[in-house]
Image (cartoon, rainbow, N blue to C red; front, side, top):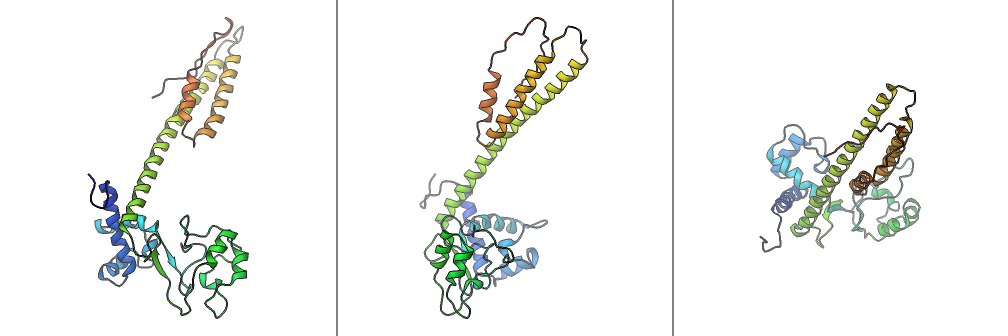
Length: 278
């Protein structure tokens, strides 16, 4: 069922509304609720970096769940630049990434955005910026307008013109996060299934070695079988390392099992190293 705003997923919609409560805490840190939560859950930290803590209340767990959406869409709007860390805080007005990706120069780990201004001025130090950042980031930083009259830095919602949290775009982020979690869970399940089969094959090969060691050595040609099995397993492990992130590992394993077995010479002893798998 689809509502008037086009929300189909009730779980995502619920998270979006929780994100709205998180946004209110960010915008009104002097409210009674904000002060109460800070005193209990993050007295020495800020809301953006607060952890869920021990034995959290239902209200706090819900707000933290909503904060995950907020974190995907907020960035700092630069005022004085005193409170924004250059390398660690989201402040670039980019649709791709709010955080700086350029390498951190030694000794400048704690650089603040204010340090990128000309001395005693609210203008960018163009030469310094060009030296510290890659070309695209340097161009982006230089395009950020600065106020002539110093004002505090403030958090804004990047995906709206007025900087205020948007429920509709928050819903888009919630859907995207849910799809990513679903894909990761599916991929993880496939990898576990594949590596379980590989582990079983390795155990079978180890047992085959032990059985061979106990066989009479006169006239028995089991060694070539074992060497062939070792070679096949080595090839399989090499391939699965390359395929385990591609999602096609199971198909590779199926093809290996489908290969026909060729009857060896009568002087050989056959030792099975593949077992059934679920």
